[in-house]
Length: 290
Image (cartoon, rainbow, N blue to C red):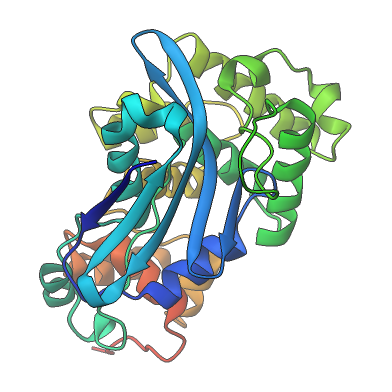
């Protein structure tokens, strides 16, 4: 069992990140267990699919994250380390971001962008989360995993399954998904995404250009601009996506039109993704009025 240390530049708001991941932890696939976060995953290696688990915890006094990978994934440990860096946004430059955001970032300069380990999983969960609560989205994702995820053996009782693969979801019918409570249009959208990923038409794991990726997602029936932008933020770690149409963001700019909000947000380029996060979680912020 090898443990590696992944370095990052402080400050880092671990309390916030731990709470964010914990609130969205997908039963059977991931778990926030005290200071540890652990999850199952599958990684391709030389044409073979390796499955196993990872476990990590922050060591803030050393500005590193301790990462442990199952023996089954040791051949791809560097790949897993890169996925963890993306999940936790360990390559962010907090000083540059804080400088770019000014007053907006003052109360929490250590806020990072939660990424993901599995881009297909993140995309499915973003679609399941349309117009429902975080809790309901997690419930639907749990049902999906219990029914169609591959069982996996781990030393952690709470980690029992891999998230269903695109190949598996591509074979489902709308009726299958309606059976676990997914609305028909959303079910068709999920199956369409899985089929596009499986056929190589939607390269979620190899998206060279974020704007092209967003266009591709918007062209899929059932995906609106909020979902496409959210996927760009969290699956592709795009630093400059502003969710101006988001309900909570609009609340932060009372009396302003969407066009005015978008113009206001230009001051935060090229860090508008981080601006979105700060606006979501900073209840006291108010815009400067002209």
